[in-house]
Length: 157
Image 1 (cartoon, rainbow, N blue to C red):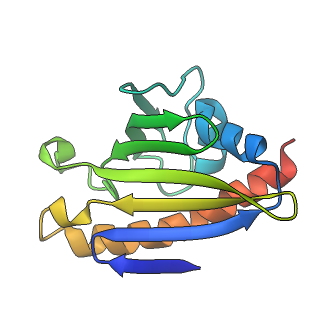
Image 2 (cartoon, rainbow, N blue to C red; image 1 turned 90 degrees about the horizontal axis):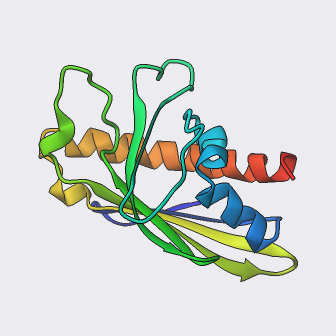
C-alpha cells in the first residue's frame, strides 16, 4: 500500500515471498531488472556511477526509454539510481532537469520473505509545471512495478 510522506516523496512497501538473495538479483541484474520493469537492458550491467539506457517494451510506451545512473549498490541491502520520472514527451529536453532518486531497500521478513521498500524522492526539484503530473504518474507506476517484481520473482526461479 502506498504511503505519501510529502509531495516530494513516494513510498511503496511489500513483502515478497522469496529469499532476499532472489529479490536482490531481480533488482541488481540489469537484464533481469529490465524484464520485470519493461525495458530492454540486454547486455548491460548496473555499476555505481554508470548510466544504463534501453528502450521501454511496455505497449504504448515504446517511444520512451529507461535511462538511469546508478548511485548506490550495497550488497543485499540497498540499490538506488537517479532518473527523469515520467519523461514522456519526445518534444521536451529533460536533460536540464534535476533527477529524482529511486531507492530500493531490502529487509528480512518472516517467514522466508523479503520486505521490499521503494522510495522515489526529489519531485520538489522538478519544474513546477511538470511536477504534479510526474508525481501522480510515478506513484501509479511504482504501484504497478512493485506488483511486477513480485510476479517476476514468483515465476522466475
